[in-house]
Amino acid sequence: MEPEIEPICSAKGCRQPAVHEIRWNNPRIHPPERRKVWLACEDHRESLADFLDRRGFLREVAPFR
Image (cartoon, rainbow, N blue to C red; front, side, top):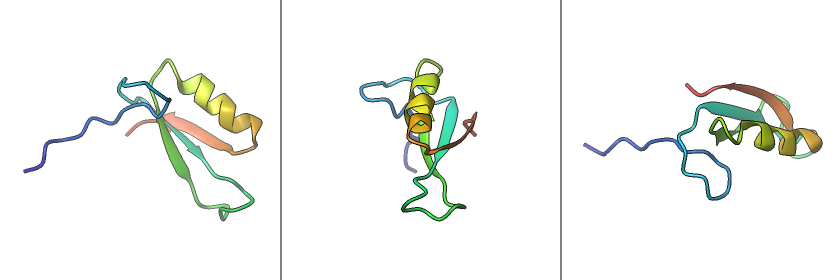
């Protein structure tokens, strides 16, 4: 049996557990229904979402399941 891997934040250098899903797509290359996901800890949720929102890529932020 493989050990369970703890999902971690997608922010560069962060090793904190993920508590949010930041769902996004690039409308120039992805169909509208496609969602890519970055994981975020509480400390990086806002900065990661802001980065994507400034580029028009942010679609939604949801609790990590």
